[in-house]
Length: 83
Image (spheres, rainbow, N blue to C red):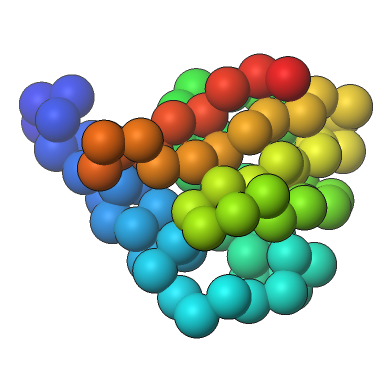
């Protein structure tokens, strides 16, 4: 399976996450989706325990291991930046 085909489901998941109508950032489904997106980008996290919505398609996720990530969409792609 090509690398592209492995990443594609993560992109669809992220699009689903950000396309929903403004869910509460502490919604368990949002935390689970952010956990999956961070893991699929190969970043250490464990589990997202809290998230703050910064704007449309833009979250700051705090992980149980202490790492923090900004998850956002840029030019149609999901980006995960360590904070």
